[in-house]
Length: 407
Image (cartoon, rainbow, N blue to C red; front, side, top):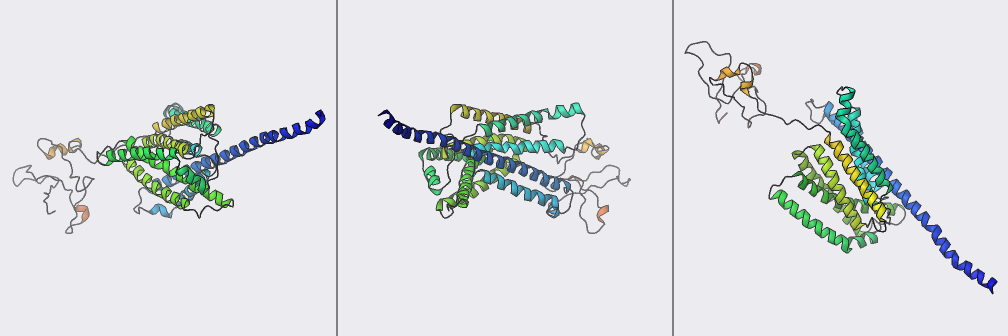
């Protein structure tokens, strides 16, 4: 009897042994997908940063050219354009492999790469002590960003599912995402009201609008990239209506996001936009990924806390890097006449004269006159002609013209 029962006992233990052997294989495969996606994202951001710096270098070299589009004829600008397309393609493909919450924070790599490129190719000559004092924040920020990136890749969410039309539709109508969308729409409308109607042109408000739109952009990008990958693997998804809905939403949100970002760049410094925009956009995108794709479903508390710590360290690193950038000196169109040697004698009281800004931002422009050569045309000032000597005396060494409305 004991010998007869032993085979049945062995058969009952086989399924449990087989189930245990399958689980490590699944975890290993998921980790490989995370690694592929993270490497693609890091590669894409590095290449995009190099491309943007190449194009910026081309613009700087041709800054004094009379042709505003002369950079189109340079190999440097076109090399940067091709590299930019390659980098954006790498970032786009990374969404198809790794979770959304892992890919989005890796954009800190582009900030680190830009800082390193700026330090390496700096043109000014500094003494060692001055160099370290000037760029100590950049070095510390780069180190923190690298540590944060390592923690993000190591403790990132490990949730993977095929981006089929059925799965995306199920996530789209789930109650957590519908509640998240309701809250986001209300917040977006309130921010847009204060920005447009109340003229609240604060950098936080504008970048919050960008972040809310960007969270929807990355959600749709992952859906589109994932469905393309599943179609390449053999299961066609491009004939589903949800694919084109996500494609249209991706294009629309990206365009409006770029519009608000351009408005912010006209009002505030690029370093301030980079740091605040990275923090707000990353936070909004992680929230959207956790709600729509359930990135952190099944993750233990330790992995979630270490991932949050990696995000905070990356935030601090980006803030320190962008804080060290030079602030542009604002352009001053006015010239104080009393500050110029000899110009105090133009008036008895030495009153400062300012040019009319409606006409030109430059002072001393020659008046167009067809009757005499341009080089001999005197400079014009928006003041009334005054008498500086007795009648019949010698003429002053300058000539002042009166301006009328017809002129």
